[in-house]
Length: 255
Image 1 (cartoon, rainbow, N blue to C red):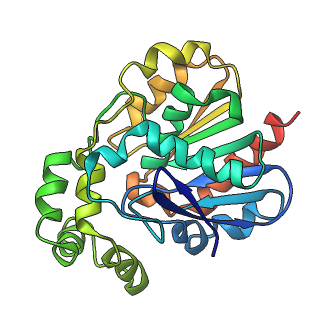
Image 2 (image 1 turned 180 degrees about the horizontal axis):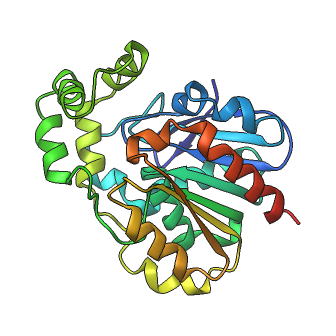
């Protein structure tokens, strides 16, 4: 089980497939398992070496309870530490939700290490419009059982394995990750100078939708894809709708 130690926090990662390197970074409350469960790994590993990372506070990575340990630059450095451990000089990057915010962090701090960026369900400087941070924290303080029950009331009953994966989270670590400074303030001013290929995708029922589209419009090399009828959580699981856009984009980006 491979780990890299970054500033005394162990980051768990895994690789699948062969070909050009593609980093996959999940969203808050999830882990690399989501990419497997919803079919992303099975399809994308056919043409790419996937570098899957459990973000700090998630999965099998360490879960500090100090909000300062979730500074955006630290999260970016976790990605770079994994790439360095694998002797990867440059890679493609795909991040969803929190992983998308880390993608904006790459623009701020490590743009020269990436050939292309794919950002799903996220915009440059917009706070969470689906679940406000203070509401998420209030629910998390009551524990993961309460968090899952609340999510099921707002959405619908979850399939058992998804419920089990959510319950596996550390509520205190998620609170720390949520209250940490957003860290992307000012990134919008950098977007017009981004010249690597970028793909943004977002469900048109997602609270981030308009701001994500605006972020894409600020990048000269970006394209924006809307996923009709789906909200933020649904798009994270919608590999059949998302993967064709991703594979087409990566094929074009490599030429």
